[in-house]
Length: 79
Image 1 (cartoon, rainbow, N blue to C red):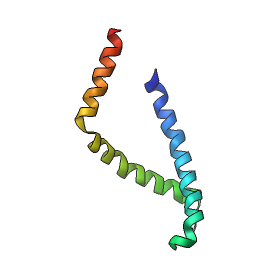
Image 2 (cartoon, one colour):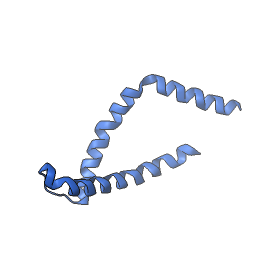
Image 3 (cartoon, rainbow, N blue to C red):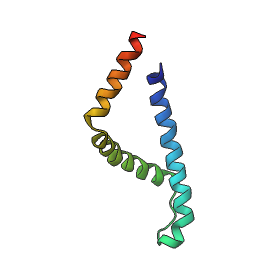
């Protein structure tokens, strides 16, 4: 049942991440030397970051993490 809620939770976290990026970029814009940008640009940047970070995180986790999650799932069905 937990897997059922992961996709909607990821969607919500995407919009929250985009909003936080927009807020923090506006806060540090003067110090960093960038122009503050809107929510649409923030969403584009967020999806770009997610597309870069997700495969990297999967590569860092490696096949051992997948095997561990399969073992955990198998042990839960035995109980």
